[in-house]
Amino acid sequence: MIERLRIGLGVDTHRMEHGRRCVLGGIEFACTTGPVGHSDGDAVLHAVCDAVLGAAGLDDLGSQFRDTDPRHAGRDSSEFCREVQHQLAARGASLMSLDIVVEAETPKIGPKRAAMREHIANLFGITTDRVNVRGKTAEGLDAIGRGEAIRATAVALLAV
Image (cartoon, rainbow, N blue to C red; front, side):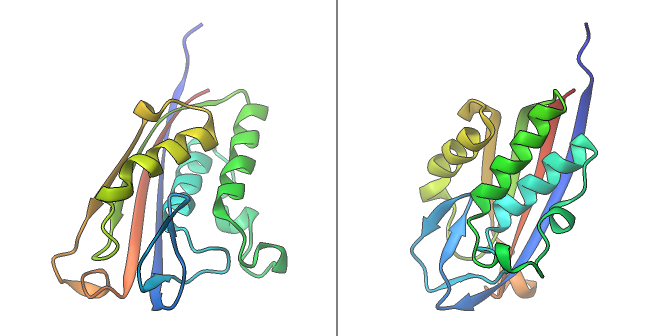
């Protein structure tokens, strides 16, 4: 049997605010600002979930885990990933790879890149070599370049 491949794209942007905890890709960063969100604000995991859900043809993260639902207030975004992985398994689909770009002036992604890759791989039951994470800056341009926001973009490849 030939596997059918499907691709999905997820993008998430959050405003950064002083005094907020900064969790990206399920890993905590020591910094003075963090992403604002109803849950933990993890833009990386939000983009990953949307990419995987899109590839599977399922409703997006915001539809499934509404920011108006008090049950999701402060929720660890790793839990969203686990639920998305259960949905994939129920459909007989499997995640083949993830490619993720994080755009931010701060924090610097490089020092925690390996930990992010490992955490995300574990959440979806794949090997670390199937998850790539890259950090980029906006060279001082726009809200990201001024450190006011962070954006994550993820591409997911599924076999169904």
